[in-house]
Image 1 (cartoon, rainbow, N blue to C red):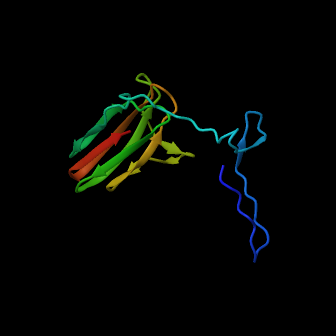
Image 2 (cartoon, helix red, strand yellow):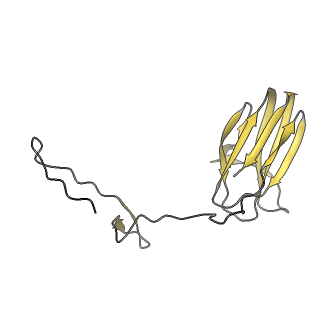
Image 3 (cartoon, rainbow, N blue to C red):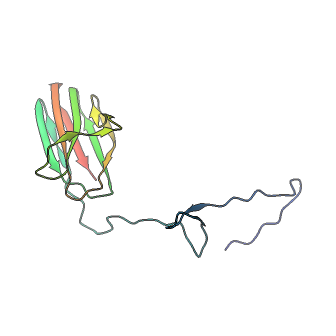
Length: 146
């Protein structure tokens, strides 16, 4: 524990700040050496990261499936000289229908230009991600990876 610092003039006081979180009962638990901030380590096993879904398209293509690890962000990279759309789609499993991803009922994961960003974090094991690609001109390069 660091040594305490004396309160010095001109202030004569120091504001106190504490960090807390909700414990299992929903009560405030202050972060301390005896009760550290709870964290979750996910996918700590080597070699479990799926192969990226990568390629290029010059027309209409359904790329996938990509089987993401649960609780790990999925990053989509799009680059090249192209025009068209790319839509991230999800299926709950291999027998489920593919559906466009949404947030609060609005479109999500729909791109019309080059991008590189996290697009999804899956919570259900066995879910599949796809890219519905419709390039109207040029060549699109894509990579979906964790």
